[in-house]
Length: 385
Image (cartoon, rainbow, N blue to C red; front, top):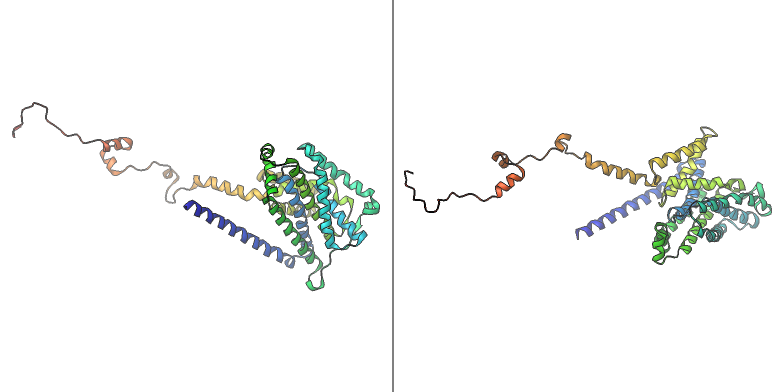
């Protein structure tokens, strides 16, 4: 009974801590655009855009156990879908988001089918080839994509009733979409399909024995990942207002994967940390030198992998585990010296006085008393004797 009560108390404390963390994060996120300058608000908006893309990549790599070096291609597909709809058909910004998400979902579904027979390095090379040939293909389709010149579209304008500037309104729109995307990813992982995806990642043979269809869930992992990337690409078009093939080279795919590694695999808030890394590290190092971003980016990745192999999201857990391992060694009594902490316990006075200690004293105290008796047949003693 006490164990159940302790467990319920732990669950309540964990729930309370998570609720307070979410509320604090919401307050900070809502107040940020009113505190920072317009360019800094733009940077925060781009962090949210990259966080959506990394959430999809995390579903595939972190929770699905597969590898992808072509995530930037799905990002570009979503961006160009929104740009073409706005430039050629003037559909309006809200209509581009579901179309980009659905189109990239189907694209990922089709791409995941031939990738079923591949794994490891072979799957990485196939996905990388998709990211390599997409920019030249976009340049060839000049009547639709604008070729090398790209497409320029109107940014999302704030309504008059909001009273917000353009950068603030865009930030709140992207923040709302990001919150929905992260909540969707969380609920997806807690669903039956998400549990099956985790089972496939941990042990394919055991998952198949339990009735999990490997081909279905692997393909769906690619589709979900591409859908999140398409949503992020659509938001990118809304924020930047311009797309071109050179903006979506294979370097973008490598950068997104590196950001996920730094942020942390299989963590719901790891994509946020990875997105901040992708956005701010090149921007800050650019002020030092034009050649600094690549060098600093690579050195920081090496440093994070040495200090926190599970990413920045797993660093607090590693710190707590290290502190917990050291506490038993250093938790001596305050009024004792280190030598006294490891000294044997003092002997009881009764044992010390009798000259016995340890097991001998125990046996001596437990031994029956010896009573002196007269030999059988001996004559009785007199008082003189």
